Length: 256
Ligand SMILES: [Zn+2]
Image (tube, rainbow, N blue to C red; front, side, top):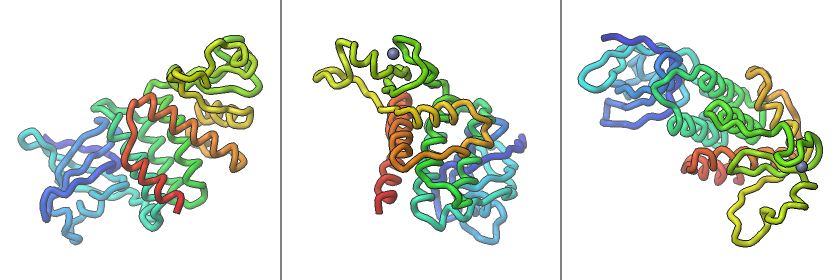
């Protein structure tokens, strides 16, 4: 059985001198694994496409319980990402989010989000922190964790200073928080909350609902970007109930 798919290589594991297992996030079949043979031989065309961050067309065949790469044609290598350690770390983390969440179901919007993020990272036109945070908010929404950021959970107010309650994905305004008996600062209470001042809240609403191709068409001050990114990461990793080694590595190199 031959299977033709278009996909992004989100993980590679060398099995031997010549064989490499790749995870492919495909438009047609969601996440699948396949073995690329002779992929370390640079004369091999499949090799060019069997590398991390490569997007291409793959012809697979099935033998036993595994898919094997028969042919591959590179569409986009996102080569520029690999020339910068922060962007490489960022995109490794974005791929790990896909590796952790993608299933055998096609998720075209999630694939498009990932490709747009890789394009932005390769272009060098956007700060890694902006790409990362916009991806995290939008990925959370696509994965079924859309936060309710339209209005205060308690009074319905839509403008002002808010806290995002990370566990249930709701926002609460300053006034309601002041009147809450148990605020996030209460000792012994395990409440994770992130500050969302007006500019940051507007940016969160924007990236959750804008057309995908305009995902990065917003600006924030450095201070706002910091809050926007912190809330994005806290929210996504809490919803996924895990963290990532690649995320820790990103933060290490980001600060260099
Ligand atoms: Zn309120």
